[in-house]
Length: 180
Image 1 (tube, rainbow, N blue to C red):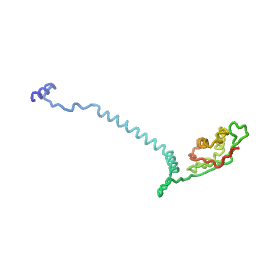
Image 2 (image 1 turned 180 degrees about the vertical axis):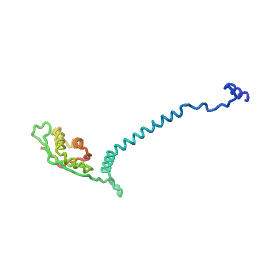
Image 3 (image 1 turned 60 degrees about the vertical axis):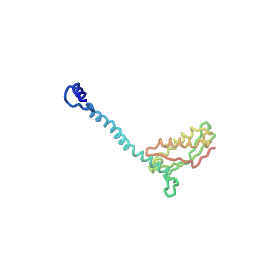
Image 4 (image 1 turned 90 degrees about the vertical axis):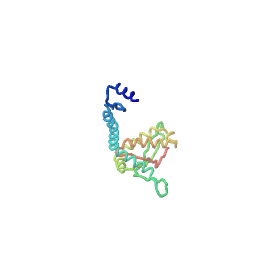
């Protein structure tokens, strides 16, 4: 056994002790200098983005709370209503009716922000025009079909919200819907 140890020392060039773990890599500190920024930069970027988007995230959170607020005492879901405004006597000729048919609607608009109600009041002419454009793009048959009402509501909400800058209308209600 002693001969084997001596042979190992002789092969390696002398009597110096040999490190059994092997040589340490020279670039280990470079690895950490690259890895730490790679991990930290996305985290910092995400934090900055979250802070910039906080107002819109808070608005969405309030909308979700408004839609799904629950009463903890009995476990039932209770809907909390927001602020309302209405647009009345909107009359339009459906597509392809040649002026012989018309649709008259009154709309109720619900939002969580009073600023949106004020903005709708200031931009009522533009909002009405937008609604007329959407409604006149539908045919009599489409307007008469009950199953198309939810699609119509969604399209109207999208169109109205495209005009607004201070928030959004969350719900749209038909308070009157007369097709003649």
